[in-house]
Length: 552
Image (cartoon, rainbow, N blue to C red; front, side, top):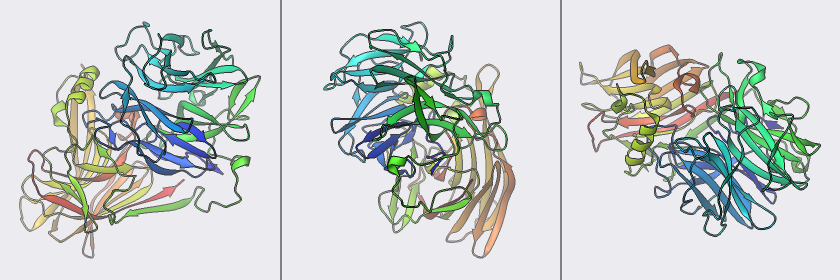
């Protein structure tokens, strides 16, 4: 069975391609590093991450300054034995292409496409050898067309530079459609199809399609648009804001679509962010029909008949528990781990089966934004100039119910602190942190801290930090930090020796979704260590991290 979502947690804007009997999928990564995770499957049911497109500092410049900048909506294509990924880096405001013969890497350095404004680029290789670029123009200060449109331009396949002038080929099926974006071109039975997302990536998100007999003629919108949306199902339908899709043809001629969507948690909350779903596509009168029979994304579908191997996947299905543990025995970090911002300055290392995080001056909260007027374009400019990251290493949360544990060794002195953090965006987070106890040098203070970002009237930014609970624990060689979540209720505790100390229970995590925090990302969980304004050579050591989730 195909069990949705096929990629659980923050994996938005999926793009898929087939190379022979193998399928590859990439998603957006925004300001996390390495960028653009690459997944592989042979049956569309089981997906394994095999690498990242952008894994070297020279390939990707992103910063902590705004998590929702960085890498937008990559597209992956395979042509004549070469894999292509084209994407936008909103931190530097560039569109570029990377290539590889092996999708696991290494990938080439980015080739920036001169004059390519806008976002969400895609590549289309036509039968006559010509290659075309499609993308969203007319947004983020680009007003060539007066409003957002889908632009088509021929591109030289050897230089990856434009070979002709651009023209608008669509601006959405709905009159005055919001945010026409994520365009992909396909060719079938002599028709060219343009599939896009529109309506914005929240509740009113949708997938629409148009077609033309020629790339020089106008595209005709499908009378049945949108071909996929959940906006008509109400605000509390369990899977919401579906859209931003891509399609691929299987070896037997059948078609499947990947799209993004979010699972709701306890009302209209989306802490896991936008995830990747997969669904079948039928064709009627040379128009695509998504999820035929229901028209909505289902939690499961039968596996494609041409890909069924006869092997039962005993790990699939809901109602099970998954436990992933990293003992840090390998010098190279597992593919699940990410930094926030490009780590130009190395502050982590793995040695002696432990992960070490150096106490940088940068704290977990970007306090330089406090009291400033919100200006998105200024933040793009600022992010492009700075080369800083925060002392954090994390991985995506994949389920709303989980138990995370980390064994930490840290002496901690003066202004230092270290621990675990659930991070949504720059200042929407929950932390279980240890700090030196001011009253007694022989103790450490463990605090559960809730941080919430608010945009005040007039566009002024403000952060509210609340200590939900604290406990002083005698200093020891190591401590086990525990974060337990049941939906939007979190509990924080610390184990020292044979004693478990409860730090805080019933902590509200309703601010960890984009519907309240804003932006485009989902929640991460990980470890941090900081000097909180003072840089140290001291390190916090973590010798185990485990994440146990309950799969619904």
